[in-house]
Image (cartoon, rainbow, N blue to C red; front, top):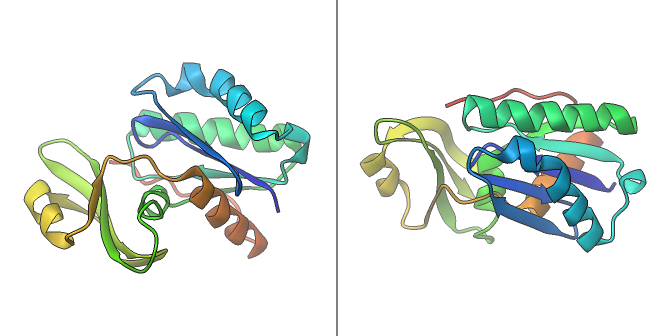
Length: 175
């Protein structure tokens, strides 16, 4: 199943399919960048919108506005294409950047030196998600990713698995 993933929960705008991915630092400009970056991504990946069989959107954790922008865009695109839509774990997508079974703490900065985080070994979540103080986050595991973009490929794979299992919809995790 060819799934298109989109994530705007972090300061990055991320797109992915199982074969390709693109992460662009967008800060708070994801909304204005979504369509032109999607067009550039699809063109470079050699994928046509008509080939997309499902949409996966990062459901956080992340900022309220960032999440709403990505989830609304992905849901609208899925409806326009007539394909199923599912939310996927943004932190799991970031943890996939490390690969293997090594433990990795993944987090997104929140206010007041807090980090919304989780602990993974490969794609298996071992702890979280939860809010920790920055120092406690640093103690979770020797390998840490803070504010790293999720892997678009990993998000697409997670979405394909969820859709194949019959999952639909999303549950946004706000900071």
